[in-house]
Amino acid sequence: MARVKWTILACAVFAAIVEAQTQSAISVTIDDISGEQISGRVIGLPRAAQKKHKVVVYAKTDRWYIHPYANAGEGKSWASIESNGSWKIEIVSRSPAASSVAVLVVKSDTNAPPDITNYRDIPSVAVTERKLEGTPDFGKF
Figure 1: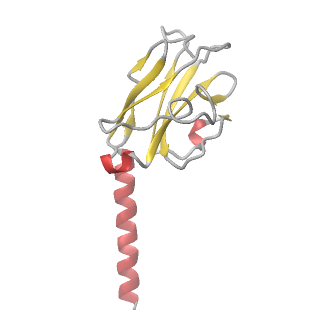
Figure 2: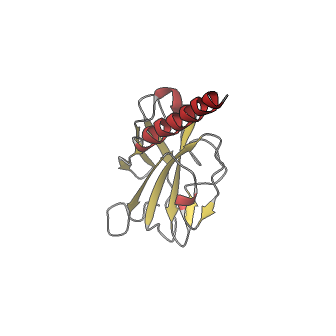
């Protein structure tokens, strides 16, 4: 009986290590911010897992806000990850302009809050942030 418990424990530890290594190999990029959309790629997420995840974009003014719209569905509140890893979301220019943008890869069933003080509080498998102030992209959000 003790041997079975140790075997189960060893398997659980091994699975946790593999999952942690897989998650650390996942990244998300911002490749383009045009006048109409922000787009990028999710790298390292297995194709089978892409349908179980989505991309959420937050823009920062006084707080971090879902961009461009909270609770508006695909393409406006979140983006699907295409089979090649690409994603895109519509953007809307607002005032005041966002100083930064953050992109998170989260599980599909994640209910991302419409505004937060720290986007890192949202469980994600990958995240990237880009400062906008002082760049040609400032004022696009």
